[in-house]
Amino acid sequence: MGRENMPTPEAQEDAARQRIIKHMNADHQDSIRRYLEAYSGKSLLQTRSAQMIDISLEEMKFTCNDEQHTIAFDPPLKSFRDARERVVQLDKDALQILGRSDLTVDKYIPPTAQVGHLFNFSACLLSYVFLPFPSIWQPGSLLYYTLLYHVPWFANFVAQIGWWVVVAFMIPIHFIEAGIMARRLWIKHGLTPLDGSYWAWTTSTFVEGITAKWRLDALLERKRKEKDAKKH
Image (cartoon, rainbow, N blue to C red; front, side):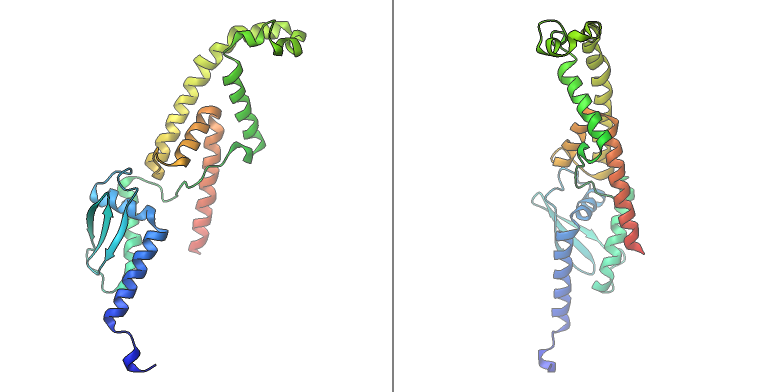
């Protein structure tokens, strides 16, 4: 290649800048959002549309809700070859500032993934649907004449306590568990009510309780192992 066809230093620098911007917007949206939360005081909801629009050796520029935000490099980069290490460190610092996990919850694992979880989910769902209504368990109902007439004492017992089991026991406990799940997803993993996974996990926890937490724990454990494996 002739010297006249070689790209100028300015062109090489601009190409590197464009590669960084494209890569960050395509693959590191979570990091961009954390930058704006930690260093520009934006909320999770405000950063949903955040994009990197420019980077120089001195600073990064982002747009968020039609506003422009600048985050400086201190000290400035010596070259764009230093950008990866610096933006990674800024993200690590942002995680500490926000008290957030570096693991992203990007999907919901349904109870069908494990037989025991599916049984628990089904049992809880059926309890919500049938237990609060005494008439379902008493003579005159389809359930009674097809099955429960064999054990009338059991049908009468359930008719008396079913409403209390659901209203006084299941709903309060599962409501608290769902609240804990929602707070965990928001604070530790950066999900908001605008994310489908937020509602999937929270609603599932309200229905089935602790088994939803176990599946989330297992998902995060797998993600941790995968992330650690990439370091070696």
